[in-house]
Image 1 (cartoon, rainbow, N blue to C red):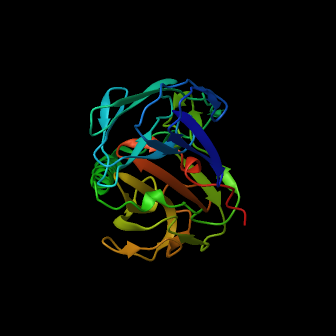
Image 2: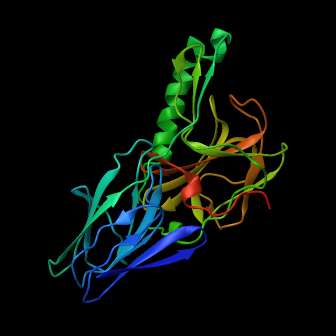
Length: 290
């Protein structure tokens, strides 16, 4: 079994093809260990790094396992895996064909370094929200969890993602602030700056599962792209779609704003695989400066 490597749209596509010899190949600044000859097929699109969402496909009827845990595959053999912000670097992917044949692939993720900012001297209300809004925040969290709880049969995520807005990148995935000595949640999205009113578009087809004003993130939209993959768009000035709407890639869904706890107008775009928070820049190529 040989790894055939093809680079497209800023990602690395790796297809396994039958061969009578063994080889290792460089993949995203790492080495993939040789695997023995097998008729089991596996195709992967993505980058093996912390925070990445990776899409793949196997033969119909085959089973996929990541570190011993079964990964759901649809009727066409498509599947999705993700690696959290601080995911262990050593991973193992296994495919079991319908005939029972196994292909085991050891993966070494590239480790990422995240920007940590420390800011002191802030007013307490800027660090910890007032107690009177705790009930609202709790309900917001429940609503967001419900909006990301589905597992639809859509597979729009297997097409090429486009940037949802145009502008400079002003914040990146994984960065973290320590405010008055208190570590806050890491930033789990990519920020695109732009004037209030700048159009925001669907990066790929989806169904709206949330369109609501939330305490922290202001006007917030969630799109279901299928197979537990969701996009979330935060701090919008306006939302031009409603829950239940089916949107196509490139269709306008809102405008950039500064609603919620934002210091200025920007779009915070996030990607979730179920409850796993991943880096949108691992599914889109280039930059939003067009």
